[in-house]
Length: 62
Image 1 (tube, rainbow, N blue to C red):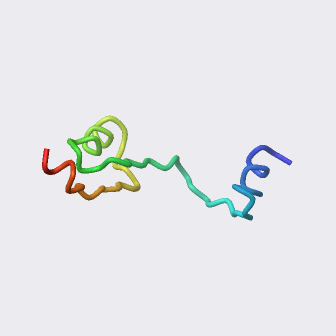
Image 2 (cartoon, helix red, strand yellow; image 1 turned 30 degrees about the vertical axis):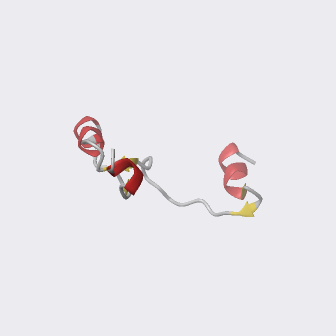
């Protein structure tokens, strides 16, 4: 059994399936905070997923 098969067999004890990605997944977990997605797009390619976190009232009041 290959390493990829072992990895796709179980993740955190749950059965999983391998998804047929033709290229690696590019994720920006802090989108909207100053242009990281733009930099990623210029240097490599557009992110596949971008997560925008809402501004918390505590940080907005500073």
